[in-house]
Length: 191
Ligand code: GRF
Image 1: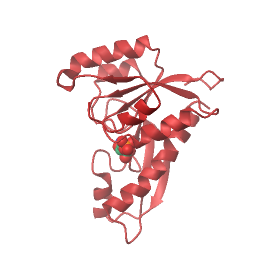
Image 2: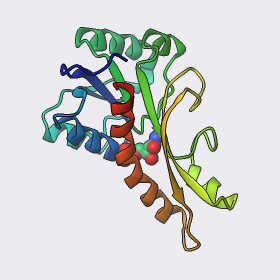
Image 3: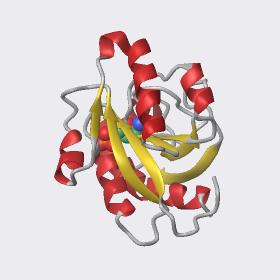
Image 4: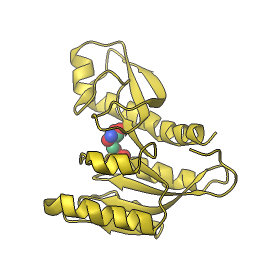
């Protein structure tokens, strides 16, 4: 991405659920140092509770019918182009994007994942990390390519796993790190 020159880059956030990363990105985007402004929140789930954060800040919301996602994706591309979206941040977006979509926005889609990639791609990361008795876990922000959780890593944060940790406690600690990591990773790609 081009170095941030003072003109905030039009950004879309894709979510499917709770949206706490969306919330943290919205407050980051309001800061002067932020290179992004959030012009669109897209959800493939009508009931995603995270949509409330977009509503509160009057950010445009786009919902598309999941059953016809192929057609929806074409519609989505049209809207992203109309709104001149330059960066797409996936934040708990649970749908795999087609390779043509990824190609079209090559180098402009990023994702956050709750593990130290390339370890523990996919779902249920905290459970698997605990089962393997790892000493550390963390979170990663990476560019999206056509393979799941495999694109170039932008930034990571590490967390020590404690004896008293269970899935819930660990998820909570990693999530609060995620809220810091995503803005930092965005700063990095525009620096
Ligand atoms: C986060 O743990 C993120 O790393 C993963 O999905 C979760 C989304 O949480 N991709 P939220 O919807 O941002 O609260």
